[in-house]
Image (cartoon, rainbow, N blue to C red):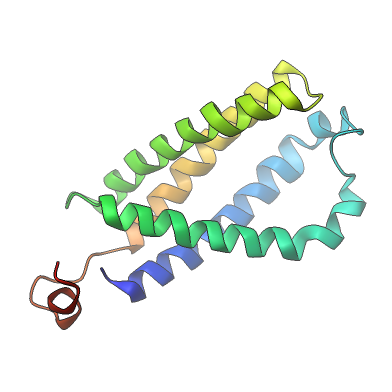
Length: 148
């Protein structure tokens, strides 16, 4: 496993996700979130929680980049990343969005919007990870040490 590329891919995915999140969740879907003030924080009150959110995103990106690296099948990085991103988006929608819809007081339209936004998010994040992560070469000391 190429740990340097893994770390670079995770960092890049975090930055890409932050920009996507600002554009989509922070702006495009903001009106839908505001329709449920008992569930979602106002834009002003969110600011105090952003450092923790970004730390959590970074940890998550290290985890998904590691999962990507373990499942890498040797094809085009971007294509493999898109495939991976699609699978994570399906997982996200099937588990998190459906669970949130069931237990949070949100409407079906917002749940669908969040699922579609998650699809775009994870396709972009997956493509980013795939474009940056490259496995260690077969003859490299890292591969020999790891027994890969």
